Each structure stands twice: as structure tokens, then as C-alpha cells.
Image 1 (tube, rainbow, N blue to C red):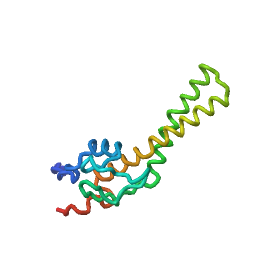
Image 2: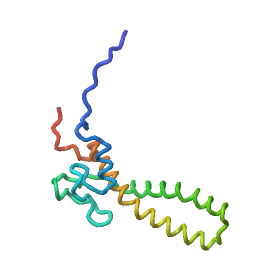
Image 3: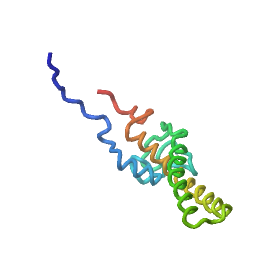
Image 4: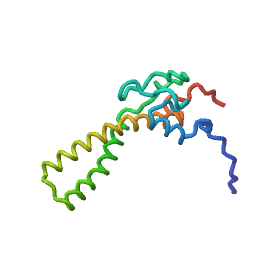
Length: 137
């Protein structure tokens, strides 16, 4: 019994390339047009893009951006703290103060960008209702 390889159907997300959507999301812009703001305030995702009208309320970012922020900041700061302590031996209070401010600042900078990127990935992959308007073949 032989198995023949059948041609695969085209992927449904060919008209939504991931990389441009991801870069637009990182810039906190609409993944569709790239010019409309995705976020209303610090972390609230708009229901739709004010420029192109793309619906964005389907997203399910939830705690993902926060977990990714913790992962990235932790993996950057922990070795850096060890390196600074081993090389210069600063006072522990100075070390804690400087790295606390750095950790908070990096976390606050990364969080909305990672949320935008996560919403953009969901849009590009047509997850959670982002592809519902496309008719099934």
C-alpha cells in the first residue's frame, strides 16, 4: 500500500503576513493598516481601528503580555545584577535601588509593546474571531 502526497490547500492567512503585523503591533499600531492607534490609554485595546475600521475587539491577550514581560525582564536583569555585583561590589542598597528602578522602567516600556504584538499575531493568524468575516471555502 503506497501513500501518495496530496497537494496542501493554500493557507488562509496568506493575505495577512505575520512579520509586518508583528512590527505594527510592536509599534502599538493597527495590524491591518499600520497607521491607526491600537491602544486606547496604556493597555486598553480599541474596539476598532479609527483609520481603517478593522475590528480589534476579538483579541484574547489576557495575561500573556505580562508573562512575556516578566520572562524578558527577569532574563535580562538577573545576569546583569550578578555581573554588576561581581565586578564593582556596590552597596546592596544602591544595587537594589538602581535595579528596582531599571526593572520597573523596562517592564512599563515592554508591556504595551508586547500586548500590541500579541494582538497582532492573533490578527495575522485569524485567531479568536479575527477571521470570522472571511467566507469558508
